[in-house]
View 1 (tube, rainbow, N blue to C red):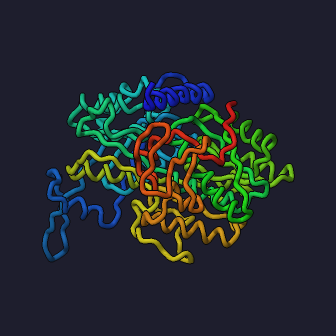
View 2: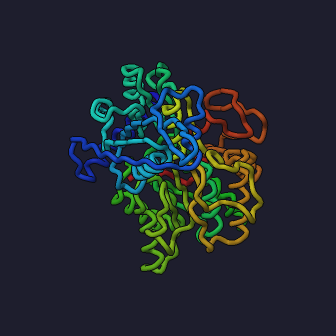
View 3: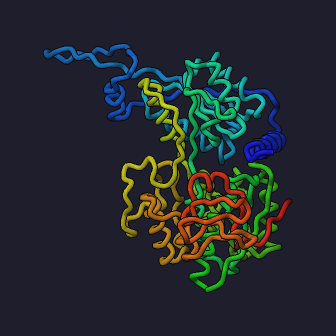
Length: 462
């Protein structure tokens, strides 16, 4: 079975678990939200596009002067397919917030969504958005929707499709030109979270509550552990110890709670990171800190979750999908569509990409598509400066976590001791005999990551 098939299979399993947990029936409900707003400059942006389609005119009459005719912004009808409920406070919630953000920034936009759609029903959900809502642009927000999206793009060449969390090629490499792909990537933020974890841990042990063993989650785990080891080893001279518990579900607060407790009680972890769509892990950390007299830290995930752990929240990874969505809205509105593969990181979609001095760093403030939650003052000042330094360096791509610099100048090894990222320019893998870039992980190495860093003691199935 290929990596893509494994990923798709894992996400199909997660969909069943999520739906069973929520008690959602197999029927689909369409939720339509219409939003339109005028923002300075956007009407001019649309009017100034040479390739824009003809639009109705708006007549403005000025008293005792002259009549000025301005083009009206074209209407854009957009449809969204969601894998979970908009109230999950994680993945789907963040996508829906991004939808609203984009809608509010382009005049004439109307959007609708269908939530909790299993993979096999993705095509029929898209049909509904096209026939019932007349959607011109459709976003599909799960890896398992990739091939159905490509098939629908081929069926409807006069519509535009964007798939989130997949490959641009889609459908065995035959994706039509009216289809694009996009993703907002977190591994850099997880490394910064790791720096915070390594700066505050007293036990030298961190835990990770993980959804599915797919490359996306694996690289986030590795980045977090690398950051934690960097800070902890500089503090103490010892390596961090990390443990991972697998949930095999994206949305399961009960299992996430059990896994979090096991990492605290059985492994003595006092900082917990996670990939699961609820604040359950942060809530467990808060309970131990405030009710059981045992200091445990955790993070936000996808949205700002500080309210769920006001005494245990260190920082976290937050996403705003809105700028990505708005990019495609504009393409359709101005008739300037291109098939693209957008993969945003720190610094993307920011008005000022150049790094700032540490004392002026925007780390912890909302900006771009991915950013840090506010930094807890409990993080020592030295490490707050380090986090801000690395955050600013990442804007310019001066620093990358998966590099020797991100591992105290040492090569990055897997659990078997093999050098995966070398301090040399190139390295030859013992496993595959393949020659690859050694000094910094490239896009392919990140996207296909299937190994764990040496500081992870074990993976614990539950």
